[in-house]
Length: 393
Picture 1 (cartoon, one colour):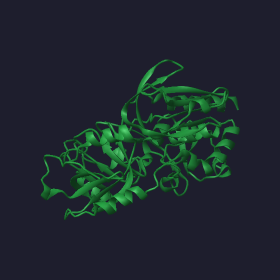
Picture 2 (cartoon, helix red, strand yellow):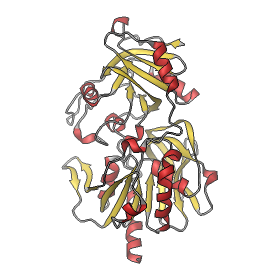
Picture 3 (tube, rainbow, N blue to C red):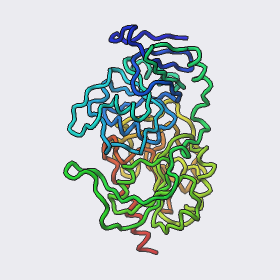
Picture 4 (cartoon, rainbow, N blue to C red):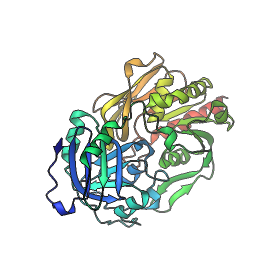
């Protein structure tokens, strides 16, 4: 067991939380949010802002987020930046004590918000050291425990971390999907008017919710799509009853192969309809599996708002937002599916396009929440495919 030295700005008297990794490494700091303990895969995110969007991204289900940027909390929290109804992440790790909010949109302090949302956090630890551990050894399982009396059973917490099965083979889409179909017409936020509402729809898109972020739905609506969101477990017939002009396969958490046990038969039938299909993140991975490809678990994954991706069709480089721990194996793809985008960090697959069907997908998050907006054109490409398909029908 390795007990890390505590942060120099914390004395032994205010140690109220620990992060215990499955290998016995222990970090001690100050707890915030609710008391108790939480277990999950510990990953790191390099974004400098957007922490509320990150914590409420359903793709983080089953994970504890280590923020590499040391000052978290400076924009506070608000109701507008929620990417789903409640946080999906298991917990959060930050370097400094939560920064006081200094933003005109702030409605609540991050510490109060985490307590209200039932999240457990730890501050005051060496997040650089934790990030190095993840980079060198892969994403570990860990437990955050928060107790105001500062008393912890480290051996028991370590055993809990060791016994957690990990994300490989885990289907988490069912935990974060909607329970029934609903309509979405909200559009993107502007500084002048806040969120808008779709006035003149051009087409109808059915979005399969494996853990969809609200801003993805807004981006679809921004291009003129009236969106009907259906649960991850929706059947082919249930989807087609809505008479879609296009199909969207959303982002989401967990192992795509596990979710694919019920999703792939449906996606294969959707492919056969000839309808335009667009997938993001988990939706991208599921589409690759439906084409006959394979996926694999990455050591660290990609999580941040500064990931360079190249569109191989145009050679253009985009700075993108990413959040994924699984990737598509390029060598496994059939001849009629091309790799359209790659990561310039490690050459992993970041986009697919069918050579003859109006179907494509990307690993990155083009909705930019948080992150740059370089990839928003993908939503416009999807709408163009839909309108062309409608015209030809």
